[in-house]
Image 1 (cartoon, each protein chain N blue to C red):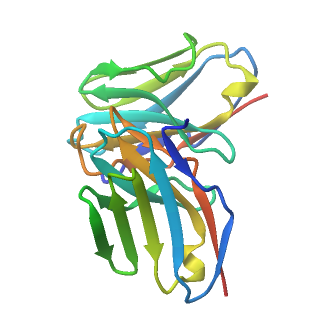
Image 2: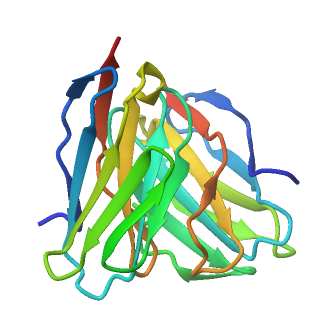
Image 3: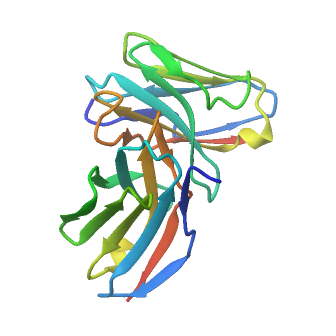
Amino acid sequence: GAGVSQSPSNKVTEKGKDVELRCDPISGHTALYWYRQSLGQGLEFLIYFQGNSAPDKSGLPSDRFSAERTGGSVSTLTIQRTQQEDSAVYLCASSLSSREDGYTFGSGTRLTVV
Amino acid sequence: QKEVEQNSGPLSVPEGAIASLNCTYSDRGSQSFFWYRQYSGKSPELIMSIYSNGDKEDGRFTAQLNKASQYVSLLIRDSQPSDSATYLCAVLARQLTFGSGTQLTVLP
């Protein structure tokens, strides 16, 4: 696609429920990244994919968080048993390669856990 | 020590003035540096990249890099109200690491 597409744009969920966030990167971009941005904060790295493998998942905050990427394209970030502190904007970015000149971000998914 | 540090501001400048945004980083091995602009409620947008010591100019924007001092800055000349946003400094190490951002307000 022309840009990085994320869905849903907004998600309200009850504490304890599982959620899935989707990212469709720019066509041909092999590297894909997930970041989280809490209100008024900077971007917190979560996980990086090169193709379908995740060489760096050091930013995942707990084992409730997981992510996968299939076909070298779409990625899904899953949060199990959501907690209120998971409320944030989840941003996906992609780049041609891991050393690309900057990342292109999607518009994000705003997750609210009530 | 945070990996990438920015003055959180807020920074206010009058329209037409020069806005100066600063950033320091801790990883001496970093080679690639970026400035992103983020409007309220929007996602970050890449506005400048710099890889070598010195200045890099693009329109009203100038990025400055000093690797010895581990310092990156962004100058915005002839600031406009439309430049009002949060500016994020980002440094590429294993992955892109962001500062917490500086909120800039340009007053008409």
